[in-house]
Structure formats: C-alpha cells, structure tokens
Length: 383
Image 1: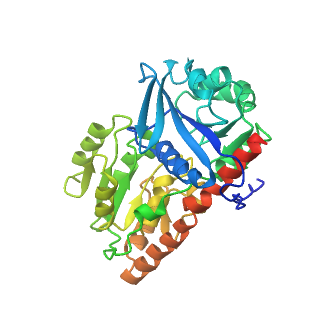
Image 2 (image 1 turned 45 degrees about the vertical axis):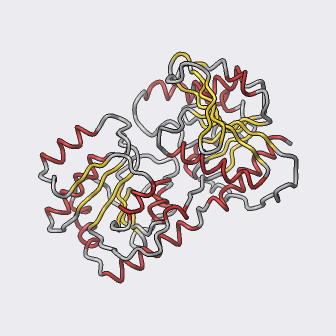
Image 3 (image 1 turned 60 degrees about the vertical axis):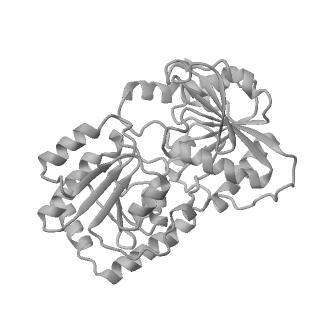
C-alpha cells in the first residue's frame, strides 16, 4: 500500500488572504456527544486564527423546523432532514448556504447529507471529511456494498477535496477519487493534560465515549473478568452516552460475571468531572473494531494513560505495544491472558515511563498543528 502523504505544515499567516466563510455541514452536533461533534467545535475555534469564520448546519430528523441557535459563541443552524438519515433530503440547506464561500461536509455515510449538498448546496465549492467512512459496523452490509460499487465515485465528485481523517481512510478513498489527501483531526490535548497526576496504578482502567456496539464494551468487561480471574485487582469505570441502548445489557453482563464491585457504569461526564476521574486512572481500554481516527484514545494519551486496544489502523499509528500500551485480540484466549499478565506486572517506574511516552506521542496531534492542512485544503478548493 502506498503510504499517504503526511499532513502538510505550510500554514498561511492570518490575514494573508480575504476572510473565508465556511459552513460546516454535519449529521450530528451538540447536545449529542461524539468524535464528529468534538472535531467540529475544536476545528472551528482554531480556524478563526486564519481569518476563517465558520457556522454550523446540523441536518437531522430531530429538527422539525429551521432554527438558528448560538452555541459556544458560534451560530448553529438546526436544519430539518426529511426522510431518513440514509435516504433523506434537507431542502432548507439552500436557504442558509447562500452567504458562504465554502461547504465543509462531515458525512461518513455519503448518503443523505451528501445528497442534500449536491441538490441544495448552490454548487458552492465543498470539501469532505471522511471520519472513518461507513464500515465501522457490519449492519446494512449489502446496501453498503452496492453504494460503494455504484454511488461512491459520483458522490465524491461533488467535492473539490476529500480530506481523509486517517491513513486507513486515505487508503480506501483514494480508490474512488483522485482528490484525496490526508488531513487528520486534531485533539485538544491541553484540555486533558494533568501535570499533577501522580497515581499510576495499571489496575485502574477507564473507558469513555459512546456506548455503541462497534466499541465492543462487552469484550472490555470480559477482559476485566479475565484479568481478575488471573489474580489482578483490576477495576474499570465506563462513562459516556448510551448511543445504542446498551446500558441494561452491560449491567446484566457485569452482574452475571460477578463484577459489580469493580466495574462501574457512569453517565456522560463533564470535562471537569472527567479530568477528576482521569487523575486516578492509568489505563484507557477499548475493544473497538473500527475507528475513523481514535479521538478519545489520543485524549487519554494526553492525560498520561496507557492504552489497551486492538492492533489495527489507525490506533497502531500512535499506540506502541510495550512502549505506551498493549495490543489484545479480545478473544479471551491464552495469548491475551499472557499479555495481560505481563502488562499488569509492570513496576511503578515502567508505568511512569509509559505514561510519559503517551503524553509525548499525544502532543504531536495538537490542533495548533492539525489545523494547518484544513486551512490549505480550503484555499485549494477555492483557488
């Protein structure tokens, strides 16, 4: 596989060109919580340093009428989506897109959102962020295969630039467009840095993020059971919004496995509460089977956490087995058992070194650096 080009670092100085107005078009936004929402909030904040002004168009079935709101000082348009999130249209996008120079579309499904941009985007220049594409689950497998074969290329032709959120996205999307470039998301590492963190116990685990099926939290809980059966006093905190209605199912698994005293389910935590929780946790664990970028993993690394995850792209680009984390198959087998035993037997100084390695690797994903390729892509799309 041809390696994708690294993110460019040729920032145009603020004020070097006229102010650009960008409409960020997304299928999800606050109060929903997840990777796309976080990326849009952070990206728009940093774009302001380059004379790029953003507003947000949230296209959703939940929006019954066109509404304008202000969130964190930024204009958010709640645009009704008619139909379904896959086969649907948002005609009122035409009304609000008129005053913008560029549309930045966040549409991993390449379905209703892209169709609305094609029909109601006033032929404005547009770029697409891929956010992992649509193979993060096996659901609708036949429909996805048909879309990939018949509709992928025509959909991507609408975009002057296709911004691959990871090397895996780059490798996939370059088969369908000649306009693909690597444009990895950034992370607000400053928000998660804990310079006073001193408690580094490898038995203290955390997962935060959506409770969704592709995250395989059932295998995370099974991993805790496996570690405790081997004699390790592991405890786990799981926190985040219940995206797929899994909470009761996970609670039953915890009870059935006899883990009620060592696995805790918490709701979504504010940043302040999450920082407090992270101060007493040394390991972030995820059994996710697909990641578009791995935002929460890099956030955890910024907080000095070691990472337990699968050996897969893009996670293995910033997690190093034996350096700042551990790769597992999450199959409950003897190999995982042996790897876990070695990991949990680490001495305090080894954990400290691994924690520092996580912090160092996370620093390279700061938005101060990551925003530059987005700025360049916008100018290229408009030139």
